[in-house]
Amino acid sequence: MSEQIRNRRDAQAAGTHAVAQPHREEGYVSEGDHPVEHERPEDWGWHGETGAWGRRGAWLVVLLILAFLIGNHEGRVEDLWILGTAALLAAVLVWDVFRRKNAWRSR
Image (cartoon, rainbow, N blue to C red; front, side, top):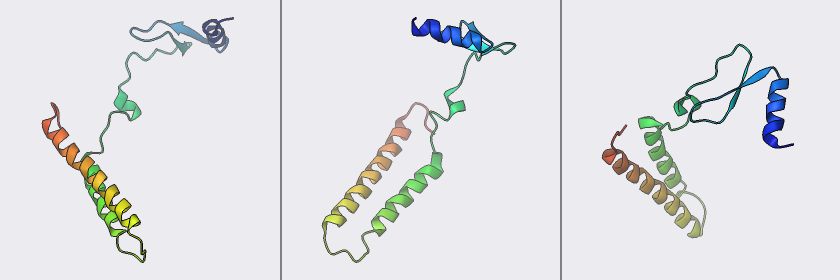
């Protein structure tokens, strides 16, 4: 038995019925319910940005990473990793400034 037929049979056994949805695959809804016609990605938490507070927090993280340079370690390999990580995060934040500035709809 194909998986589509098995899914349809299981859905019908659970008291639901199949609904044709435009631009989507066939859906199943409970008896008496109305199918969802459009779900915005923002309703699920996708495509959101953290805004100004997120960017400020990221710069704070850069400063906290640089604070790890103060310590009792003797090797300089740790310092290189710390500086590299902070520089990479700072580069992403600077890139984000230019991305938002040149975006069609900047936030």
